[in-house]
Length: 183
Image (cartoon, rainbow, N blue to C red; front, side, top):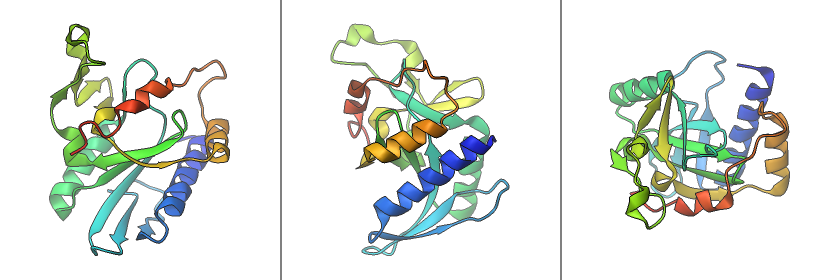
């Protein structure tokens, strides 16, 4: 992991802590090595304990989805089974300027997604979860919108991105899909 990626991930964690302040008590791992979850949250109202995994990255430009390493997905599944905790995956997305996510069990639910209202746009490639190489992708329709990032937060995250300067972030309309199939 590059220093920029580490800093970007740390910023994502900091933004999660700010946006959940007063709603949950967050406990983070201080391990610099592989760990089952980034942290746990204790919700104030329900006293539920939730395992949290944070991904500080934008959705893909050509598909209305986002994802992470297949190896990490397998680790999360094993940890879920071992600790009987359905982790909540949080994406801090500098492209859309949003924080969104959902429980792993919701993200993993098999689904095909038709972009827009035209079923003729259906494409077999849009079956989820979608594994491409060593990455697993989940559709944005399965994500709950949690918070909007400030312009300063977006700027800081983009500055730390390892994407080249010519990279085009996904269009705003991608994020209209949030919450559509998030239960």
